[in-house]
Image 1 (cartoon, rainbow, N blue to C red):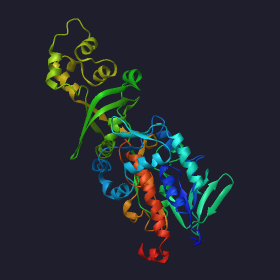
Image 2 (tube, rainbow, N blue to C red):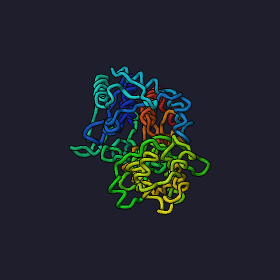
Image 3 (cartoon, rainbow, N blue to C red):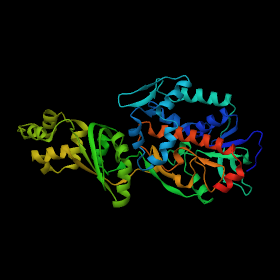
Length: 420
């Protein structure tokens, strides 16, 4: 890579939160920053995430927060400790937006939307000297180590002193994260963990009757349990019935476990408690009372307050005989087994697991085999549930990569080449 010691230049590829945060660290340090994105504008998935309210982080105690990153907690802990949730909130405040903690502990900007925040941020980045190049699709490197980009005016080759890759995962390809970088890195000998759907829905294979009546309806106030290997998840909340299966909060929380179970055994079993606030004995008592002339639908509505999708789900999954035995029916209501056949395709997932392994980078997120190339954001091999954990780690890893570049540029590069 070329180097002009007067003013080093850094190319950042990817304009999501991780890339933009790296740009912020570098441009404020006086480094010449060019940010490239394949899409016509930056931050598309970020804007999409903020449609229903931008959940930027979570306010739970830090140790609990770290536990959400499961087996990658160790790798992410120093990165998150360097930019924890309260630092992210202060940073949002610095852009002129207040934040608040919702009832579930999730943190939102008072504005709720991503667009005003992104506008203010891009304005600040431009002021600091970051230059944006949209419709620049990265194609890898040429034989001289220059970055290749497909652009509306033809292919361009660009030299930079350091590169930050912040290319996203493999979901929501239409917003820019296509996962095409996996092959480009593999060609250079960089090992990556396979991309897999995370925070995704699952197929059940409903009957046409159930699907046509209830697709899109929420199952509110349920609890879900999953047992796979030594791990057990018990989660209370809501899920949504889809045309082919289930998705939503409680499913996303357990999705890593469910996905791994499907991969290993061909399916996953969840148990739903449709009345988590009532003990089994109470449900049995209520169902032991004679039905009289009531239809089963009316009986369930009067005895348990069941209507619509909850009653429909019992009809879909239980035999006629189960309805004739109060104890069987009560047990099903408290632990209804549903067999999940497979996760939905990766492009529908909210996020992806897999990516660049931490083991192929140094502590500054620089690839050991590609000196001067740093990685950040969702393209790294980690996953977390929804609830602000995804965005916080993207911001924090972008900051870490930016600081890593500064550290590296400030050292004698010959020493670095030997060391890594």
